[in-house]
Length: 299
Image 1 (tube, helix red, strand yellow):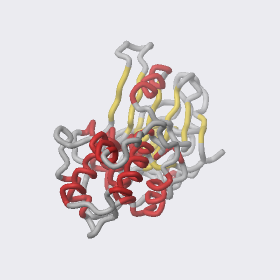
Image 2: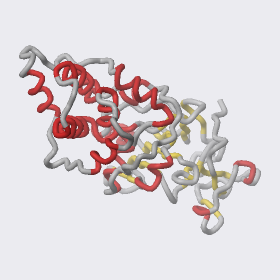
Image 3: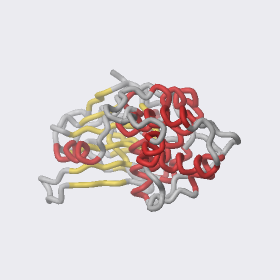
Image 4: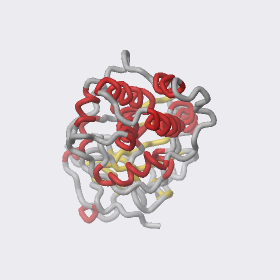
């Protein structure tokens, strides 16, 4: 399998090593045909390629993911050195978010050679790619996974934005994304639950005053994050004028914002038997809007 990496940018890496060159290689992106024959080479993650590389280095990294992220990674281009539990996954990031994320890493706190960790690789880093030769094993890196790059799941983007300490950009502009192909990207229990609540809520409250609209939006954001919450609201209560959800989201303050419980309580005033258990397994309404927006997903 030879994946499509034609839009990526690269750097030279010294033969049989992980050492990039020349000086200032981080700011000298190359095309694949500019890599000298026989050299190793690396992906320039971050703004040069628009690629986030998630590097799992050891079993500890996979355990950390299960305990902290709670989502399945969509199939995408990936590569490995062949060493056990070592693999990197590549995901595209919308250009509008490039300046809002940074490299984040976590590890088990143990010194080498037993150090293991996970790294969300962005600007200023390179990842050695197949068929480069690994300096320790003397063997070629191998491609695994898919042959096209998937888009980064919303949950990961929000996680990285929060870690960066920057506010998610709120403008009337939209992200340019490829069509959603992975069901896992939006199949979170939280989004499924919000879909059920808003479906019922709109039956009883089809038209909202400004205060009601603000509170429902903030409840949705509290439950599913900015991206999921706004996408859900646009499904059930479309914008009356362009950019109004962006402006409302700017005023969101998590410490004082209501949660989904306030919506459930309002529904139960009209239907005492309403419950969110068992949770819906299919959030078709929200996903339909996300797919409809496609290259125009509000961020």
